Length: 200
Image 1 (cartoon, helix red, strand yellow):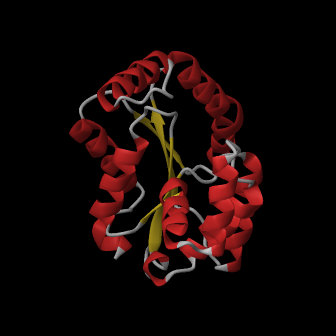
Image 2: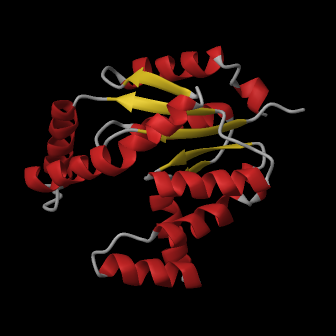
């Protein structure tokens, strides 16, 4: 049986998970499945799902678990994700974990590892504030950043307890240079036998 690399990267806003996820996926030769990217791609393509998402986000609402799951399942069913993928932004709560479990069970598959990027709240706040200044993002006020971090702590962090019980969480120190953090992630995955040669 061919080894797989079905991964999930989890971390608070400002943890660098988007950057690290892309690096790890590229190193392993698997696609990154970011809900934000998938939403944007569907909106840009004018698909029926994209039109739904556009209307929801325009109203300032969060896309429902059901619709998010539908979009992710559609993406994971594509050929390039057959031998592996790296999920970023989904599942974001325990209900979505159950939804993902059900879908993977249908494929006779499961997640191989969950990468948890650990970054102190103060560090996340500082990084996001700096990014807001550099990019001129007026929506990234300290108050808005703190609110998003609180939502992560309340809704997303609990999914890690579910995956810890399964013994598949690798806690990674998310403070350091990009290369240092990438090296830590790759070492943790290699310890599980997840490498480029195993994933391809």
